[in-house]
Length: 289
Image (cartoon, rainbow, N blue to C red):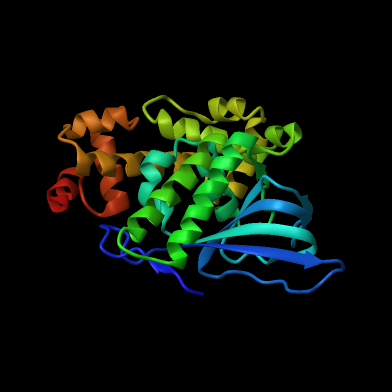
């Protein structure tokens, strides 16, 4: 598979991003189950109809559907009637470079921190309204054209479109049915986005569970299933990650950063920071410059 490599862009020299358009036509079940071991596959259904299969479930597809297949999830299209899809393939770390700006979106949490981490094969299908879908198709077609005949500026154009595509999905993609909105994976994704945006608030299990309309015991179980860590561990990691960003990108004092990231005691913050990164906040800041 040919990728347009994003060279000469700080932090993106080894990352890959490609868009392909395929039309599937199958009138009977065909076995071509496969998995992508080292990259994500975002599927956008342009037109037609069909069925998408994973080990966990099989679902019907129609125009406007969108779903992200994490690395390692086996899948195929057993039935397809003029099923035109865009496959958007990108490396594991591609959008992680923009995590700080995107993590406050529930859809980003759903795509990368829940479905990806759980790796259960239960791909969640989302949908776009007509206007957003038309904008998405335009971006995908522009990207295909840039990759087909690359020239000066093509790398920049592809990167710009890649970010626009992800931002569009983060802002506007919604569950296909209202019933799914009450599911644990959707409620927890919304909670993670809210916590990322309010790390300075006091969060405890009772408050988190209430936000998800779950009992504390059910919330704890569901949270660990989707994130592979406890709520407390996830929150601490998010606060440390935010502190890293502020230490590198601001001239705020360690005490100010501690408060912004939700640590009431700057000494406790310093101990936890060193425990996780083997450097004190001041040492980390010194090495970052």
